[in-house]
Image (cartoon, rainbow, N blue to C red; front, side):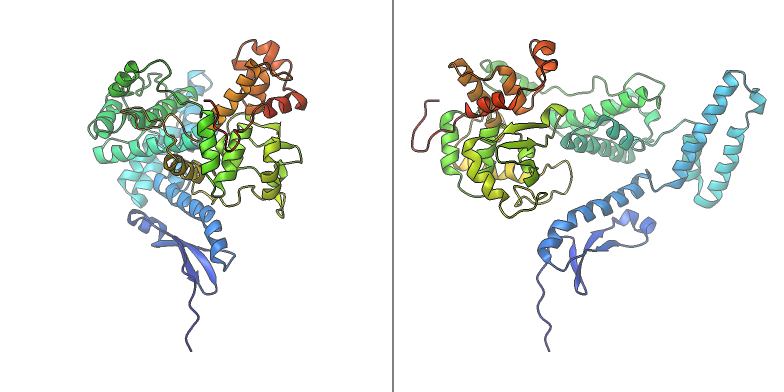
Length: 466
């Protein structure tokens, strides 16, 4: 009797009996350390659609485990032990300096050398030398403190991912160039050689290179700040690349010509009428009539909405977490998207789980919107530039511009500071930061509603004056 044909599965998934499991291939260089060629984990479902949603968290966890083995950050007990020796030896040296003990009584360094000899017998001379160098404070593996640095700095997801990528690029280059990959070994000459060989020689765009260099510079500043490096001379200072072509284009433009800008009313009308596919159509309407950021909208859950207000979860700063009135023109969309859902369900349930935190939940919307915008010929790309001056964020700029225009035309019930409260900008960065920013707090709901309702979507069939 022929077995029933099973539904085909997506990447990283395979059938295991009546269940579905996640499969992550182990890089050849790590097979010996891991002991297997593939890591596998069974999911609590036999439904391919559910498995597709659940797999990303498992993939991320398994890849993180492999990365820990590769970098020696958490899975390397010898490196942990070496850092423990370093702390003990440094504490003993401080006691000698302060006269608490005599120098001839300081024996930890000698005991550590005996321990290094034991390690050499079991793990070989390379591991033994690394152990001794770390314990004596002569070496700190490049990536060992990256997680601590990023945890303290709390960069946004995309920034963190870019900085991690920069550290990985530098580690890989050190390995290829046979440069000892420890933070103490990196001089300005080594940093300059990396920039030349990895970016300049390979024709990497200055903006891309500078992102990695900025991360490395920030990491070294933190290492010095937290006492992991004595030398306060940052080898990455002054290493950024100048984009001569961009500077020439900028010099030839009129003031403001190359800057990102709001949509015109005509462009908003074209987009409203031309974008009909879901969920993009609803997403764009909410962006236009709330001024919310992309991922603020993408992360909205049913529990964030009441009949009249939207509790914005925020994605950037404390100012971004706010409650704003729901625009009357959005009532049908919001009611429809909440209907029949649990309080924890996403308003835009169609958006798939992203592989990493660096790709915000709204990333697929940006891609879909860019295609739709170009199809509708809503574009403003200056000659010689790679980017258009209008993008999804232009809805937010348009909302702010329309609120400002309303004030200029005599609207009452709200102020310029109210606009900042609606869109989640800091009022303390503007004029009268104490008087109008910190002391009065946020505007009340009546003023917020006046601001939101002052922004009106262009009417279909009527061509607005832009």
